[in-house]
Length: 299
Ligand SMILES: C[S@@+](CC[C@H](N)C(=O)[O-])C[C@H]1O[C@@H](n2cnc3c(N)ncnc32)[C@H](O)[C@@H]1O
Image 1 (cartoon, protein in one colour):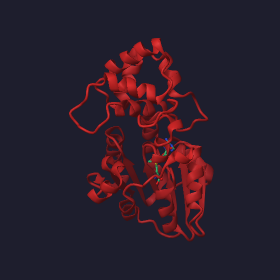
Image 2 (cartoon, protein in one colour):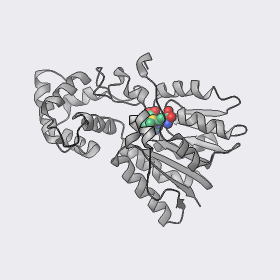
Image 3 (tube, protein in one colour):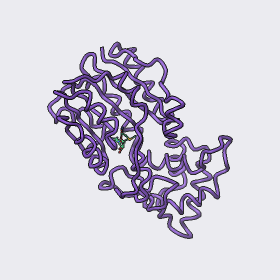
């Protein structure tokens, strides 16, 4: 990751700590370690005697997080480069049946978003990649060469709730005949010329397309379902899970899963409705505006 990666400001740290109540000696899993900002607060709270299992599918993020976690004196942590859909397997491989707490802070970090070469942002010009792990699979620009208009429109609608999906897909198909779309700059200029502005001022017309391509490329909904499916079985009794979502395609399944756990008598909800960031936090970190925090306790 380039030096221009930028700083990631963690969201609702105080609220996460209040809900998870980390204590010395606990074993916690941070499934989305990112830059290790939440993780280092959790590690501080469980030291001495505790252990933080930190996961991220992006090896570049684990390298950043390792530097952050290493600053905690006597902090014990284990880093795993894997997807959280594999949580059950990762825990077993690490020798744990269940842990005292789990944090999932979904989506991507500012370090990934602000890194032009990751190709995830309409604000940065770079190759249109969108993969969270660049050692696996192909970048999105290659998919844009071959996806049919129907498939592309389906991806934009399903993964980004883009109501102008077909219009955008047709524009991409017309454009690629003239010139292959390789960079975010090319895609953003095209989107700016075809997307009809919506009623919400301040939201860029390219936002949903980028979200959709990233979520599709990284199988984000499937990952989330797999992870939510195994969470109750990965928590000790009294163990707490906290999930931070950034849009409805993350928050709706999280809310539904927690309700299911409650109805099955496996968990008690710690948040009846999602917690939002304070105005003060949003003022200093605009990314916090869309964040929704939900938590549940294994019973
Ligand atoms: C919002 S950031 C987390 C930031 C982190 N809480 C911090 O304080 O720095 C989300 C992270 O989750 C990772 N991630 C996203 N989907 C994942 C998945 N399915 N499995 C593992 N990691 C994932 C991303 O690579 C990214 O680093």
